Every structure is written in structure tokens, then in C-alpha cells.
Length: 442
Image 1 (cartoon, helix red, strand yellow):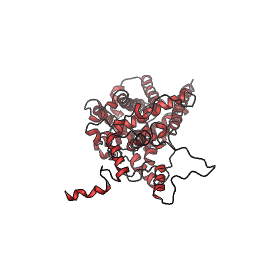
Image 2 (tube, one colour):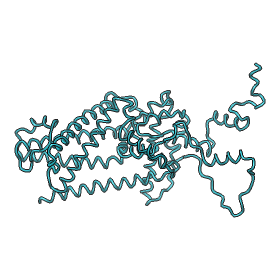
Image 3 (tube, rainbow, N blue to C red):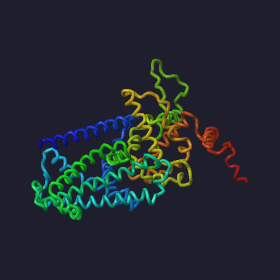
Image 4 (cartoon, rainbow, N blue to C red):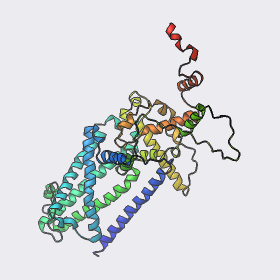
């Protein structure tokens, strides 16, 4: 009978980690649906960016209130997980507080965990108030209705419950230690849960053990549930912020990538020795022209798709966007959310058709993101600068614009007129080259 809890714990652990691993494989497969791009330059700078931005939260504190609260939750999440390691070992071995032999170090650790747990509780409550009572404008956008709003609140509820279970478990444990209960030797420092002792005072040891064990089991099962919920939530950024900041753009934000095929063609036009009408050598294979730009998620790069999964839905990008501020439909946050939603739809299509994607008559452009949204963008990079985890919505916007212009000739009339003028007159204005200086005679 004594082995039953350990067996049940092992089964729960295997199921929880196994389901998480299954979803991670699916996540990696979906990201790899994108075009392959090589990002391996300047590794030292990339490691520095990941350390400063993802680990050090350097961009979060640009908005001090949200930044400091997020750091508290983040540090609490990371450090308290050391306690999870002890819980896992205890669960598999049948021991209780196996690290307690560390003495004073253990006392300091448990005390630190409790202070952080309390800090997380306070921060999460403030986050909930900002979302639901104060109702910050960036949480009220149309793309944040329905599931995105519920998702944000569910995570907050998760964190409140997990922290409360942790403190309840410690409070009951402390009371059992004070009672001299068998198996509960004096260990740990409890600066927060000691205030729960009046609740437990007068309860029998058997009742306290039930409370402590129930909180212990619910805490670890809650963590496994939380771990597997991440795949379905915006909180994937907890894991993906690290690779995303590592692979973030290092070139100046205003520097755009030239299309290789167009660059080659322009060079041919500028080379007087090239015959533009020359036929390819006999027997040579004529390459099929690549698609210009992107109309669906498979046309985007794997890095764009990693960006989409990393999006925290914080709305900093949209709140900084001048197009959005002036009433345009564009929301950089929605661009990333739509890309992720379409990618998830494609992934489910592949799952339903035994690993093969079958055309569903939909695409990212048109069914999710409209032309109006794309052309509202001023390409100012405000969204890129604002993102706390190095996401680049502008890159996706520019690729989809390129598709509209080069594949569908669907640019706005003003842009088409400008390009026609450049082609005919060598300048954006509708004047013959011979008449350009006529203004000086007026």
C-alpha cells in the first residue's frame, strides 16, 4: 500500500510530461512549415540579446509598473520551480522534504520561495485588476474579445491557485512540525505561511496530514496541468521568448531585405554586356520562378512563425502604432495573433489528414488579414521597437504587401500611379524628364 502513492505519482508525471512532449513536437513541426532561412551570424551578440531581453527582462521595464510586476511573477515562476524539483523527488521516492538536510540553506530557500509566492499573488491580483476593473485600453481591442481575454484571466487564476496551494501546504506542514507529528521533522522557514497557523490550530494531526497531502497533490498536478495548458495559451512565450530573442533581428530596424530574384534582374538590366533576350543554354533547366512575398503561413519563414507563437498579446506594439492611434484598422498584435491562428488551423488540417496538408480554400491573406490592414502600415518600426520579446510584425506585413504588388498587382491606386511614373519618367511625379526644371521659371 505504501507504494501506491509513488506509483500514482509516477503515472501522473509520465502522462503530464508525455503529453507536453507530444505538443512540443507538434509545435516544432508547425514552425518548420515555414520557409527555411539561415540565422547563424554574430552568435555572441545573439546570446547577449537573449540574456538581456529574455532572461534580464530589459525591455519589460520600459513601462515600469507592468515591467516590475512581470519581473516579480517571472522570478517567482523560475525560482519556485526549484521547489518543484524537491516535490518530484519526494513523490518518486516516498520521502518528505528530501533537501531538508541542507540545514540553513534549505531554510533560506523555503523562506525565499514563500516571499516570492506572496509577491506573485500580489502582482497577479494587480494584473487582474488592470485587465478587468481598470480596463486598460490595450486590453479592450476587438482582437482581445472572447478566448484571448479568457486565456489571460485563466492564467492569472492558475497562478493564484498554485501559490495558495503552495502556502497552504507549507502552513499545514509547519503546524505538523510544531505538533511533533511523525515524519514531519523541523525543516524550513515559513515567513508567510506561518500567518495561516491560526486556521490550523486545534486540528488533529490526521486532519492536518490530509490537508497537507491534498495541497501537495493538487499543487503538483496543477503544475503539470499548467505546463500542458501553455501550448494552447499565449503563455508559450514563457518558453519561446528565449529562442525568439536569440534569433531576433540584428541589422538596423529600418533595413529591409532585398528580394534576391529582383536584385538579380536589376543587376542584369544595369549590365551592358548582358543580352536580356538571350535564350538559356540548350539542355539547361529553367528554374520555376519562386513566389513573390507571402499569402499564407507556409510562405513565411520559420522565424516569422516562431514570432507568432511567441506573441504575448500584451498590446505594446498596437498601443505604439501610429496607424492604430489614428483610427486605422491595423493592429500589429492582431497580425501576430492571426498568423498564429492560421498556423494552428493548418496544423490541425495536417493532423486530420495523416500528416498531409489538404487545401482548405483559406489563406492568411484575405481570410484573416485584410488588404486594408496591410496598407495602413507606415513601416515606422514602432511595433518592433515596442515588443518586449523581439517580435517583428513589420516583416510579415511587408512580405504580404510584396505578394499583393508582385503577384496580384493589387497595390493601392496611389502606389500604382507612383510606380508607373517611375517606370515612364524616372521619378515619382507625373512630369516628363525634360520638364522637371520648369518650376524655376514660375
